[in-house]
Amino acid sequence: MADLRIDFAGIQSPNPFWLASAPPTNTGYQVQRAFEAGWGGAVWKTLGEPVINTSSRFAAVHFGGQRVAGFNNIELITDRPLEVNLKEIAETKKRFPDRTIIASLMVEPKREKWHEIVKRVEAVGVDGLELNFGCPHGMAERGMGAASGQQPDLVQAQTAWVKEVAQTPVIVKLTPNITDITVVARHAVKGGADAISLINTINSLAGVDIHSWNTIPHVGGQGAHGGYCGPAVKPIALSMVAECARDREVGVPISGIGGISTWQDVVEFMLMGSTGIQVCTAVMHHGFRIVEEMIDGLNNYLDDKGLSSVMELIGKSVPRYSNWGDLDLNYKVVARINEEHCINCNKCHIACEDASHQCIDMLTDAAGKAILQVREEDCVGCNLCSIVCPADGAIDMIAVDTGAAPMSWNQRNQIISGLGSSYSEVEVG
Image 1 (cartoon, rainbow, N blue to C red):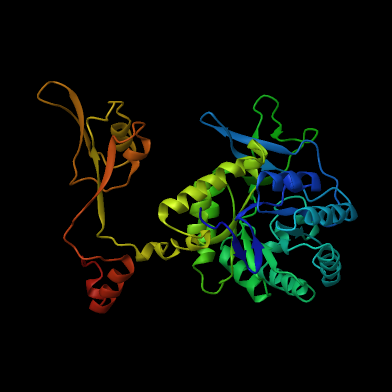
Image 2: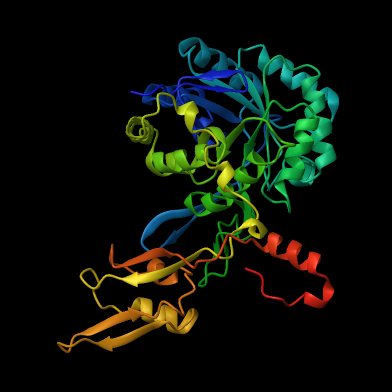
């Protein structure tokens, strides 16, 4: 089997599977159970001055028969005394010395507060620190969490304060509730961050009960926005990871977070630049033992690819992620319908007719059988028909040779600019 060990900013871990700072890492009992199941590391539920959490606090979005397609919470950091958490961290590290324990921290944006908590946490033997600049609810009005994470200068300053005393690697956890996540990532690095983790949860309201008119969840008839996570946020998280991974001014290891539920998700995040990953919602839905299937799946995948180490995956797809303006406008794919697999549900025709480019015709063959046929000269290769098709293998998207040389929008504009303004409408390609 391939080697699943990772080196994350100098932190050694037996595998890339870490639990994110969240309810599953609230106690030593839970983290130890997770390590027994096979998790390589855990980011302890955020430490700071204990808070009082609300009841109720969780909600979920179910979609298309799938439970917990998205998950919403208004829970805050630990509600247990720091001394209790530190005692359990020390006990857990002693029992599992080969596993990674990262302390998630959140305090007021004051140098002395950061210095104090860093020294106390590192004294019990953690392998690293994760600065929680991402919590979008509850702590924001106190100047913490996303309230800090949305201010690049404050992220840089607080990271620098931590680095003044930290003896272990410092990971900065980024909020997605911002216009450009790379701006904050760069400032974290300027402050001395050894790594970044992303994404934290997204501002959200899970829903409204149309009978009682209460928000979901509600606390005595009142609600507030919470943090959204789970499978529904994976595309957002993957994009933000990719943006940071390809940014030369960031250039530090990434711990990927957001909707990771399967070994396939893990592979995607690592290909897009994550050295390791963190999981929360999938564990809350299915329990700690999901890591067994994730480990087996990743091992088999690496064997199939002929890779000896999981570290060989990291960032392999990053060069394939670019700006829209650099995409080849002369590349063309068209849809082709395979009659032997088509079940004649007509969903592709309806979708194309009502929401795309009206290039799928309903015809009758020589035997009088109804068939669907794509007019390839009018097909723009949008993929919609293949997306809505419920029959595997019924529609393929086929690359066709246009005979034209590759030409991006940026290249086109450069050529037009060189020709002069009088040729601004010229067709190039």
